[in-house]
Amino acid sequence: MGRIDIICSHLPKADVFADVGCDHGYCTQYMLQNDLCRTAYISDISAESLKKAERLLFKEVAEGRCIPVVCDGLKGIKSCDVVLIAGMGGEEIVHILSESYLPKKFVLQPMKNTEKVRRFLLERGARIIKDFTFEDGKFYDLIAGEVSEEGDSYTDWEYKFGRDNLRSPSPAFLRWVKAEKAKLDMRLLAPAMKRESREELRQKRYELEVILDATEGDV
Ligand SMILES: C[S@@+](CC[C@H](N)C(=O)[O-])C[C@H]1O[C@@H](n2cnc3c(N)ncnc32)[C@H](O)[C@@H]1O
Image (cartoon, rainbow, N blue to C red):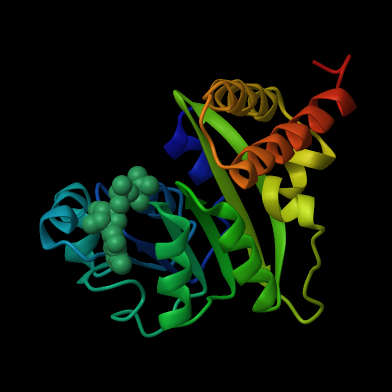
């Protein structure tokens, strides 16, 4: 499955769905074509990008089932019960959600800084239901969850690596671990480096080794 298919397969049913930073609009097309939402917002900070989704969904826009908005994050969307924010950096995702609101359910696919997204969500009392790494040419993280009364708690390792990755490591996640370890091995070959930096890299490498050791035989 490709990245977009994987994202779509984790989108829950919604009343009002918001695809923030929609660009092409494929995920909203999936929601509307499969009757998974009553109304969908397609939004992007770039009018040029939004035009792609408007072209793809012109029929649904004409019918009023799909509402295009040029805006920063959720600022132009009064309310929605499911939000998708995919293909942006984790810091940008946290910025968007802290500047507006955290909808009842969310599917987030940060390109980097996923740990910051996990920490933000748990600080906000959210419960993370899915948190895993997948591969489609590159490695991607996906987090799906909901705002909940009970909240959730993560260990330091779960914040760093994702809960599902540690509980049931997938072949994709283990390939990511091996690739990261190989990168660290290369960096550690550099002759000149501050002692603290070398220690930090060694610690990261050690953590990856622990994960690989724990899954030896499963791969
Ligand atoms: C790499 S594309 C990802 C498109 C799609 N969500 C996906 O995952 O394939 C990132 C999109 O986010 C938009 N974007 C970046 N920052 C944004 C923000 N603060 N609010 C809304 N859209 C934003 C960009 O204009 C761009 O169209």
